[in-house]
Amino acid sequence: MSHQPPHPLPGDAAPEHPIADVESVCVEASDVHGTDDEPGTSASAHRPTVRPATGGLSVAFVPGIMPSKWFGRWQERFGARIPLDPVPLEEDEDPLAVLQRREAHAALLRPEAAPGSRDRDCWHAVPLYRERPVVVLPADHVLTLLDEVPVAELASERLLQDLAEVPAWARLRAEHLQAAGQIERELPAMRHTGDAVELVAAGLGLLVVPMSLARLHHRKDLVHRPVPDLPETEVHLVWPRLPEPQASGEQAAAEEAVIQEFVGITRGRRAGSSRGEAAQKRPAPAGKRGRVSGDRTSAGSRRTRSPSSAPHRGRKTPRRGRRSPR
Image (cartoon, rainbow, N blue to C red; front, side):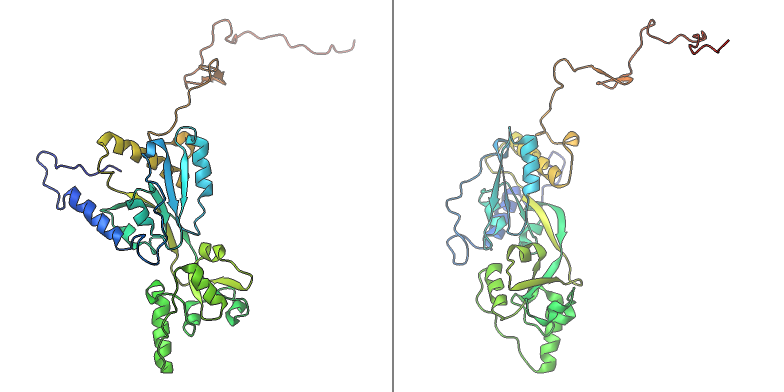
């Protein structure tokens, strides 16, 4: 993906929003989620600003996502030249703010929890996979008798999360409460998913989360069941669309090439089919260049036989065999 040029080309119309304005909008959008000085967020003041990606790639990831397979493949292919630094995030950290503060080059996140990542003026995003939604409930709950829990079965249950997170349940819940002449109780104070899981164990309600988060917070007194009629949660790889302000065009292109290599690994691209500039070209070992394999050389050209080695045609060779008895 190429970056938008900082100035319009001759004959082109000027962009509707200058680059500087777009960058300030991206900063403001990231600041909406809070800073480390505000309550409810984890302090990351000691996390250093990343160096250029060409000298080392830093990838942040939110809880529940397990990128060790991709990180291992990166280390095998490029670790000797471009080491990878994993940046695990806390549950109350905003991954977009981490990227905006240059504490990581890219982040693995769920766009439902970071809606600002859908702004294509600010962020590149590559969808990677989807996660099934599950409901977390006490082990002795009556709904554990079901292998799957339809969302209609949750209408009479209290979910310990914002109504906007599960809109299908919110509509059914409102109808149920209206028919019963009841009103929804206010949610208790919760900092993150871990707190909500504690409240589920205490019997104060249920919780709908991606399966990976349910497994992350697994407890012996809790179980989870799939909710088949709720939409799946997406996992994206996200990185800033705009380069670092002081970076030159050449440096920005080099960093983009490194990130594209990681994109290729997450998409299952093999080492031999790598298309980025960061791929390491491995020359053939000395003494094996041009080696004949079958009827072709290692360069792909057909092997030519010398006249002496070519088979003679038209002349039959006497067949040797056992003499018949006389």
